[in-house]
Image (cartoon, rainbow over all chains, first blue to last red; front, side, top):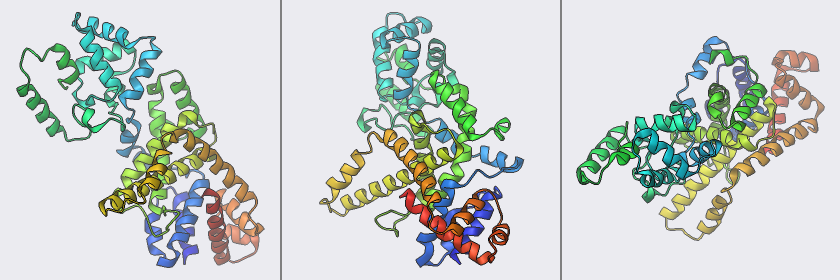
Length: 198
Length: 207
């Protein structure tokens, strides 16, 4: 029976119908499941790609998981690389941003925020649209690409101003709560750029 | 992404690497999407069939499978910078290796957490050490991926039963079970068996 299940799986795979191996393994007798799982895994390591027809390809590329996997680069990895590509130090980037965003005189604060961003200490969803557009222009990278960047997995829990992955509503409420707790004179345009959200 | 349907994996890898080397990965954004789209069905199936080497009864819970599969795909992409392979076979061997490592790490982390909850801390240093050695895992993943690809090729060439090797090679070339049976002059049931036993032997080369 297990032999036949493997053949059925192989046929379905080759037909491009994206079979679920787990379902095939579940159909095998309990004592034979591990062996079938191992055989399927070996087949998958060697199997050529199926010929996907137009419909199968459309389904394959519409998978929402693709964006989740592809857009996962953290700021801590991306920003230094983009900066170095333009031969900019963090000070240099802060100066260029301050000039572009009309916050000259606040370079030190912008630099501190950039350092936080490079160490995954900021919540990406809180970066403002204006900041992302300015970063895109200075770093010569698409704003949409920057928008997809995430907080790195290595960010210490307590170091994040707000943890990535929490619900959008909760994040908005958090922004409002912060704003209410912060005295107006302490919250300036640079804070708004780096923490004001979009 | 329709224009990428017939672009071969080696060409996708070449474009993604070129964009990455230029520091402009967004230039190959669609190619990266196509590579992930093509790899995910394989990754999901490895996650669904994975068994912990130390205990074959330990599997990934249904509810966790999709998250683990996405983590594995991310891991494969992250490895790409160090990956030397260029062929479709090498890429998929690498993807399978990353998927297996991700499953193993997930299950071990889960077991560590369960031990901690149960107050059984005596095993923790060993598991913590195992996890710590994964710190530089991109390099390890790339190396393991090459070993897996080489190991599979060698294992296939050295399968002890020539009919087994023949059945597997023809299967991978797309022959049907009936065609293989006719060529070998044997029954369809025997081809099922040759294939099943052969792949089970090859799986040991992946371990």
